[in-house]
Image 1: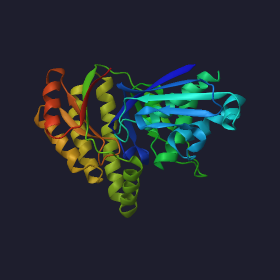
Image 2: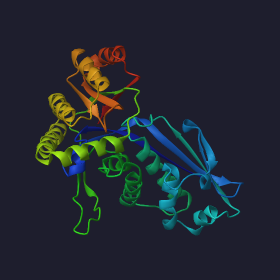
Image 3: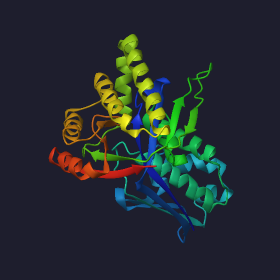
Length: 325
């Protein structure tokens, strides 16, 4: 038997602009996580048990681009003959149990967390340990299947389980994806973030595609917005490392305004952002792909409950208070 866990994540600054090679800043959210357990099965084949998404089946019944099937298909060439044998209907089977407290399509990186936890559990089960770099690369390949042109930040912050400053590399001369530059961040002074779920599923692939269309129609305008967002991410990193988290609030407000210009916010997100600010949050913004999912607010511990109540009254489905340290 082998087990593995992976945290959720939130993007503090830089979503969407990071796809265009500007920096982004993201942190893990330990309060929500994916757990994966891999063990021998008396049945031949690879069996998936994921009660949170009502999935109980043999992996061969899933389409090749299914989130779980695609992880196994990507991992199989690197594995021992055991996993490949079971894929072909061998006598020794594998059972994979997946449980998650991360809401799906919410901006908390549920897909990448499943990929990372599953890759690590399989590598441990098959006695083929992988480095963080290898896990990150495999998880990024899975992200590309489901998000088209992802930034790579979800799989990166979830793999390393630390705050990261990430810059996606431009494609190589042969148009090959070359990944990105990852730098872990040391938090000078811990700070508190309220994560608010709109309850509206948000598909990152769709919002990323819409921003791409906007960029094609007016590249000069979009590039200037990306530059501003990239500068905000850079300033956010300095504030965190220098132990001045109070500076993050104004940066959040600025970042949200630019994301509104990119048309990736929504009335529901804007309403929750306004509610958080009026209740005393130092700043607030949408987080992730947008059009639903989550928004985040910088709060002082003594006002966390007040801000939470205000966001709930404004329609929040759920609020998670997390400390970044």
